[in-house]
Image (cartoon, rainbow over the protein chains, first blue to last red):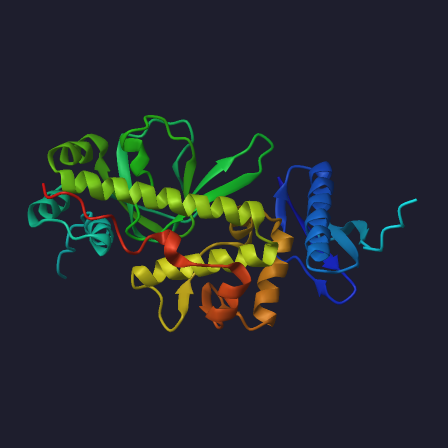
Length: 84
Length: 250
């Protein structure tokens, strides 16, 4: 198990992940990044955001950047077309 | 140097009596039970899922969590046990532990043999009622956690858990000037909320930015109770502070 860190940047803020998470391998780190992205995107949409864009940097346990995850969600509620 | 007073189940008895007083004989019987005292460092596993414990353990000091570890290694924390709480009263009737328990801080535990506790429950109806109500209250808190994880937004979920912790600390005299010690890591809080640790950190930062809470080290201060309650829908009624219904005289 090694400690990976997931730093999140969105349109308004950057949050460093100081504590990180112990994970068995790179595949688990990718899954964790997906879970992080999905949770934040869903939450932001529920809070009323129409468009959410995140950049998640996965840091290798030795501190070097390993991957950048880009995740976007858009939601638009429009008028329904008239019935024919 | 004076000898330390031996520990008893005094904190648990005090918890039971905050809800309903016990007759003198029953109180004395609980306090006279032979106990074993153990001290553990943080992170120590105290109960393992699947084991068959022979004792029931009370938190004398510190905080303990109950959890389940899933096959993929992920963890769901199911409850926090504070001073005076029985970690595993259920084991007096359920032979196999259906969850694990870990020390979240350095802890002192006072344990009694299940057989001794059950013997008192059989002999004294008032003790049986008190133990029953204690387990029912634990179940009520568990129901609220189900709602918290299942239906509340991440912000409301985080606020609700902090308010519950503060209320439970207040009940045992450990809330001072709206502040309490919260020896739970970001990972632990995330696993209690069913969120990722990153999302949990964002929620705590948001609560701070709104001046709903203040954190200094392990100390948390509730700065705006009204807004936290409004955000989370917290209503302490589910903690049943009113105690049990008055029963027939023994």
